[in-house]
Structures are given as structure tokens and as C-alpha cells.
Length: 124
Image 1 (cartoon, rainbow, N blue to C red):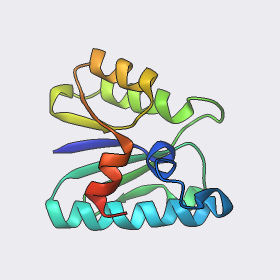
Image 2 (image 1 turned 45 degrees about the vertical axis):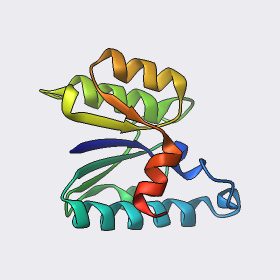
Image 3 (image 1 turned 90 degrees about the vertical axis):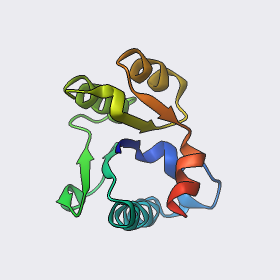
């Protein structure tokens, strides 16, 4: 299975105080996603709206991508762009609860899983 993950949406799906330590919340998500990818063999592309450049890269079945531009819907646009480049978008699931993004990726042929359900899948 291939996943594109709307990181901010997944992080924000549970009011656990993430807003007090955004960088820590991001790192916890990435740790959980990395463990999930290693455990399941799924390929994850986690897209961040912003963050330190050193978070970006590929390892162990997981890619961390920073949106190439700042601002509203930056990660959403990057997820849609990457999905449009997929040879078979029908095998991709997008983890988000953003309605507009969900509509965009479904129109491209991908499946959608809610952010909270995906977070529970990760055990995060």
C-alpha cells in the first residue's frame, strides 16, 4: 500500500496539546509513521506544511517531503501534485480529513482515510 499523509491534518486530529510543541508533535508523527512503514512494508509519503529542512528525505519505506511553498493549502497542493504524477493513483490512499483535499484526490482516483483513523492505525 502507498500512502500520502497530510501531516498537519493527522497531527491536529486529536487535541493533545500539539500546538504547544509543533516541532515535537511533528517528530512524534514521523517516528510513528516510520515504525508503521517498517512494520507493514507500506510506502508512506508524509507531507509537511513547514519544518526544518533536515526532516526531509527518504528512509526505510518512508519519504518526508516539505511543501515547496509556504502558506495555506501548501501541503494539500503538494499531495495533489505528487498524486497526479503517480502511474496508478488507484493504489494510493491519502490520509486527511480536509474535505477539499479529499475531493481533489478522489477525483484523481485515490482512496481517502480520515486523519484520526490513520492516526489510530499508527498508534500515535
